[in-house]
Image (cartoon, rainbow, N blue to C red):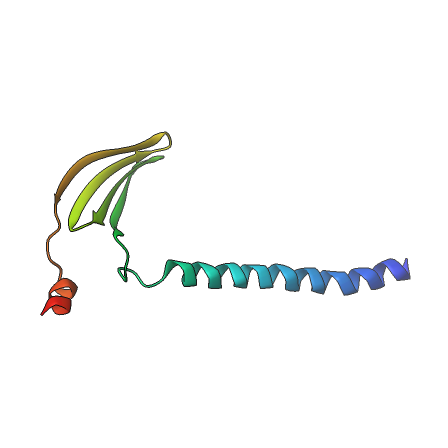
Length: 95
């Protein structure tokens, strides 16, 4: 019984450390792979809105266009598209 408790006392902190390390590594890799928003990326999520459980509306910016998407659990549908208005950050980059 004492041997079991000693093994448990050794392995539980080791297991907790491995779990914490894997979560930390996952978060670090996600931020590194995602990069800065808008930096060299063509697709940008502008806004989402939950309409009903499992139903969302999303506005994405792609190649100077804003596209309205309807999303359900079964798929995605393009509902509309317009020219993307210039934002203050766009004018600061060009001017």
